[in-house]
Length: 126
Image 1 (cartoon, rainbow, N blue to C red):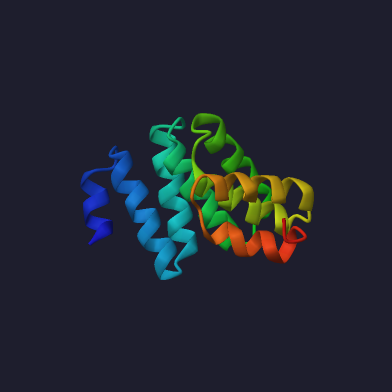
Image 2: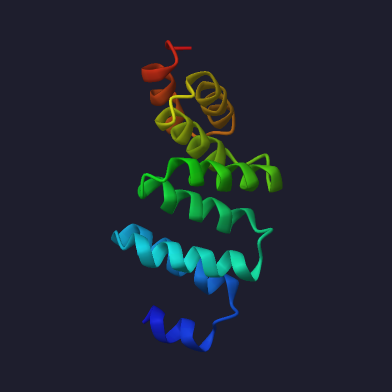
């Protein structure tokens, strides 16, 4: 049970990170956000935790907040194809199509194959 584990490991960044993933995947976005916030409070320089919170915020349709987190994640780890893919999706939702397409193209170069379909649909088939 995550609640018990986290109660005895409240300073374990990875425990909070993984609980955020589990809550996000189960659709419990409020708990996912709380867990991601806790992981970031322990270490705000972990690109994975920032990416995870961006995913939760994206699922909550809080695209502007998600854009801030994904930007910080990319600053910390600019070779993350997964981060570029999410950044492109966020920018599509924000109607920043030119920058979305640039990020999706970077994601595709970094082996994120899902970017291919998004490029075809949103970027003139580049």
